[in-house]
Every structure is written in structure tokens, then in C-alpha cells.
Length: 201
Image (tube, rainbow, N blue to C red; front, side, top):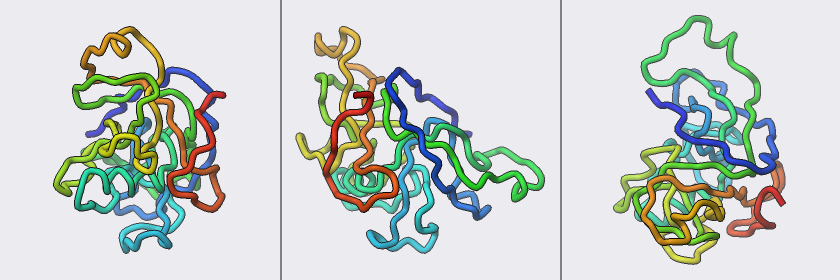
């Protein structure tokens, strides 16, 4: 069963209401703290998904490389789930259809602490979704990593927030605070790889 390992740290979260998958096949279920993307059928075709709905990162189609996985997710990045939706693995309930909300709250900005592979970070370093090299895909919707191609903003979902001493001293860490940055304002036309500024400003 998935659990929320993400910690809110600070900043304006700019919450918006987004549409979850109304189907009950389980693919659209996510936990609070999951990194979400909004499916756009005009960008990529995936018969499993409903256009305009948000899904956890683990659902996105695999790409051939880590960089391509990060880029595909970043382009449709919607934000951090502010609430749980649907049944997680091992959970059971009755009358699920009657209990499903028509919208869910998603944080489109703010500073959040995520798990990451052990590494050193510098303040303002670009951060993307964690993806496994070789096209295995995105195994964890609550884990981030440095972008595969240094300096490539089209792979990023945020930047490392200036925080505690380990960043400054170059100590390897397995948790990192990220200032998330959705690539476009909600409900506007996508502009791949463009960002208007950091959250909380």
C-alpha cells in the first residue's frame, strides 16, 4: 500500500481543483503527496487514460531513456496531490462510485520535501521526477531526482530550495526540499519547457 512520504515545507501552494479519472479501474488512484500529471491526448495517445484528468506519475507511458521519461512527465506536470483519491493497493470499500469526488485539490506551487536517490545538491539545481534508466519508467510517484541532462529545463518540475546546511557543505542526502514549478498556469495552453518563476514569490 502506498503512503504519503512527502512533507509540506512552506510557500503559497496555489491550490486548484482538477478532475480525477471517474473510472473505477484503479489506474487513476493516488495518495496525498503524489506527483501528478494531467493527461493531454493531443500530446500522446494512451487508451487507458481520460483526457484532461490527473494521474500519478507512475501511470505515464515509459520512454526509452531517463531523460525522455523526465521530459514527458514535466511537460504535463500538474502538481502535488493535496488529498487522496480512489483505493490504494490492499484497500477495500463499498459503494465506491457514490463516494468519488468530481474534483480533487492539487498544489501547483510551494516547497515540498521528497525522497531522492543519495546525491549532493546545490541550491536552485534543477529537479525532475525519479525515473529508472533504460526505459523501465517511473516507479515512485513521490520521489525526485536531478534532471538527467544538466541544465535542461524541459525535464524539470522544480528547483532545490535553499535550506539546511547539507546542501551548502555538499553532503549526500536522500531527502530534498523542492520548490515545485508547474510549466504553465492551470487551464492555459501548454508551453513546453517554459517557466514564469519560482513558487511562493
